[in-house]
Image (cartoon, rainbow, N blue to C red; front, top):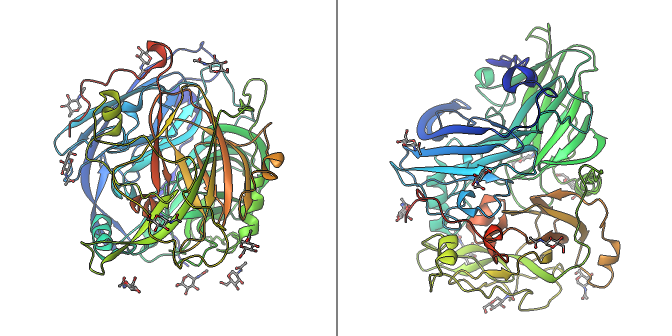
Length: 565
Ligand SMILES: *[C@@H]1O[C@H](CO)[C@@H](O)[C@H](O)[C@H]1NC(C)=O
Ligand SMILES: *[C@@H]1O[C@H](CO)[C@@H](O)[C@H](O)[C@H]1NC(C)=O
Ligand SMILES: *[C@@H]1O[C@H](CO)[C@@H](O)[C@H](O)[C@H]1NC(C)=O
Ligand SMILES: *[C@@H]1O[C@H](CO)[C@@H](O)[C@H](O)[C@H]1NC(C)=O
Ligand SMILES: *[C@@H]1O[C@H](CO)[C@@H](O)[C@H](O)[C@H]1NC(C)=O
Ligand SMILES: *[C@@H]1O[C@H](CO)[C@@H](O)[C@H](O)[C@H]1NC(C)=O
Ligand SMILES: *[C@@H]1O[C@H](CO)[C@@H](O)[C@H](O)[C@H]1NC(C)=O
Ligand SMILES: *[C@@H]1O[C@H](CO)[C@@H](O)[C@H](O)[C@H]1NC(C)=O
Ligand SMILES: *[C@@H]1O[C@H](CO)[C@@H](O)[C@H](O)[C@H]1NC(C)=O
């Protein structure tokens, strides 16, 4: 296999040169401004050229570099023919849902020719997050990494790496994704699966026309590298490994973890993982590879994206070999990997796990087929939480809540499913498959109360792993299991000491996950499956967290340039 590539990143970067040296001046917050021009650009992959929506003509889009405590102002100007909104995935946006980004949840879209400046502070978070379009499937090409460095003078709680790189994993279609989605909706069926997986926008040499489309990162023997890995794929959980090299996981979703060594990581859409890698092998060229994990009988794009870890001085004709990735359906690997994740829970970075629960929620995840008048077949695929398929409103729910507009949503999302059944018993598709839609139904949460939410997968149509993302918060993943959640026995096995803290969690196929959080951020916060396919089918809802006792604990007033509908 002849492997060429056009962009070895020789970013002998040292944050010293880019952002001022660590450990010198005292912490000082800075204002960082970015201009995001949303524009269409023709890009070619797998021997196909097509126009895609980009930010600043870049694919993937620009990385945002900030330090904890900084203020960010990002002026998104839309020159494309699509409505646009951008989500800063994992940023907590305290009292400031106006800058969160999901279209029709916290804002109306930025329409063609308009601008909106997302203005927010990066408070109490450090690590890797990412940004992406949050409307339709435009995030297929509109995404990039966010690197939040610790405050100046604060070292990482792990050995200082010599260099850092971002690896953003994605999915590529040769066709126009927005058209595919339209077609799919007409048929009431999923659009076709992607044509390739990508690493930093490139599929690598296992695909045709790879000569220009392989990423390589150059390493020096003996040095340590921090890889900031993001899963920006739309629908696929991914395994990722580097041939011959172990990785030490040190952070997930911008929260430090207890370090552990692994040959393969598992990363769901929406999640991020930071790993340390030591270039301690014979100088050579080693493949880094990403391929899906899918343990349900569902057809997906199972192709492998590859990039190269290239030791300095090694010529390009040296052929790399692929790492051994777990098989596509390796449930045991997935479960054991997730079970290793623990919050660092140090004195400096404690895990503030709610021990007492004020509000218990139990939501079932269902897939199904609903009637559809406009669909060719009279039916469409649908997805639901507690048997409710969420229908997008026509104006932003946060505005409707803030201005107390009537008739936009109801505040009656049920705390438990309407029917108790054997959720993961087989097979269930016979008579429970139609879900209820209609006006959005939200769930009201008292300010500063503690919430436990159990997400229960079901065998309605099919079991499947669902990565759930909550906006405005991190949560603690206190428990998880296969089969039906047992409210008597399972809580006894919770980890309330150092559970992983994150913003997106995979609910295992045919299983459940229990999360806890303190509702101290007032606003309207979206919660949804981060598989774009399922979000589109209605696997989503929103919480309304009430205001606190005073102005300083209430939703901020909206910015003047908030886009109108
Ligand atoms: C955002 O960018 C647009 C296009 O350059 C410009 O017209 C607008 O004034 C900018 N907005 C702000 C607040 O700077
Ligand atoms: C961010 O912090 C600055 C400085 O403290 C403050 O003026 C501004 O209102 C804050 N913005 C948000 C959105 O919290
Ligand atoms: C990937 O999918 C194709 C087409 O469905 C199938 O032929 C192939 O065996 C699959 N490969 C793996 C590794 O599962
Ligand atoms: C995984 O897939 C392989 C072939 O695709 C199959 O032989 C094997 O039985 C599957 N394993 C599980 C646990 O389903
Ligand atoms: C049309 O709907 C029927 C009944 O739900 C289903 O059996 C069939 O597969 C559907 N066909 C298509 C093309 O969706
Ligand atoms: C639920 O279904 C599973 C699998 O079909 C079965 O093993 C289990 O006994 C059922 N549980 C109950 C309470 O019926
Ligand atoms: C969902 O609601 C529909 C309509 O009321 C009903 O027919 C169906 O049985 C419900 N399904 C479940 C799983 O509760
Ligand atoms: C929220 O509750 C915690 C625990 O009771 C308390 O320490 C904290 O002060 C409360 N926060 C606010 C803003 O009331
Ligand atoms: C863009 O957004 C506006 C405001 O919500 C809406 O009226 C319009 O129909 C949208 N345009 C498209 C093409 O979706």
